[in-house]
Amino acid sequence: MSGRLQLRRGVVVAESPLLVEVGEERRPAWADEALVGEVRVGDEVLVNVAAVELGLGSGGFDLVHANLTRGLEGEGRAGAHVIKLNYTSLQHAVETVERGRGEPRPTRRSVPVLVLPLHGHLAPAAWAAAQAAPGAKVGYVQTGGGALPGALSRDVAELREWGLLRGHVAAAPAYGAEHEALSTLGAIDAAIGALGWDAVLVGPGPGIIGSATEFGHGGLVALDSAHAALSLGLPTVLSPRLSSADPRERHLHLSHHTQTVLGLLLGPVQVAVPDAAGVPGLPEAREALERTAGDRHRLRPSVVDLAAYAGSGLSTTTMGRTIDEDPLFFAAPLAAGRLLGE
Image (cartoon, rainbow, N blue to C red; front, side, top):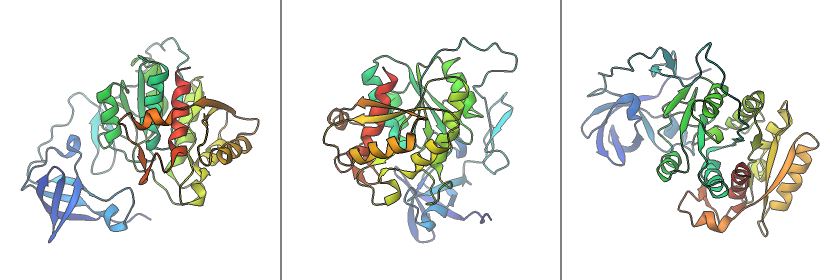
């Protein structure tokens, strides 16, 4: 059963980083200005405090729900007739990137699709793809399973600025990217058709949802994403969630997220396996992958360069652990990204 929104009234006291005074407490916050408009010092706002009150590790800040001072004059998007976040107080009109009914299907290209288990794989996978295939047009389809706002990810902004991502599509329920789609399948179809991408990275936004259960976690979105790619007849690669230092047994070596997805897939996929010497936990992870994949999925070893990525300037931390502390986590998306360029 759903709980009520935990909304509180506050006043903005700083803009960068955003701080909102709620009662007598100054609290960090984030505002999706594409939805709520600009936020300035002195504005009276409503903030959703649920994540902070629950102590969620992926939260740590309140979310501006509405700006009562200057956010009530939004004009929407002229000509749009499709809604995202529909039937919520944040519903808004968007123009979608999917092909129109009756439009000719573009000539199908054999564009590879890399399915990411969580957002932390995006930067290393995009970097490795660029190293393996310089000039390739690689884009990112953001799905559910993690943060929904397209503007929240610092990694996406940085990868776009560096030219390592050539586009960003938000597939519902995600929203707020350069392009909007109502389905992951429609997003991938548009990516290889109208958008002309050479490779597609598809996965959740930051802050994956989890409940420590077999099926109740955001990692299961990888199952839907892989099925979407397979249904279009595209080469489908899975980046496995690996770790040599995660304190949770269910995520150590080969995460139960990846094990579950590989077991439930209705068709075979390729699974990237890091080829690197001296990475703690890699032999155990490889053995677990072989056992889980069996004869259904194809394991594809791929050479990784952890040192080069560590010096790239891109994100090298996950859940508070550095690339030196958990090299296996980063080795998996580096291996997967390299496969896209082969």
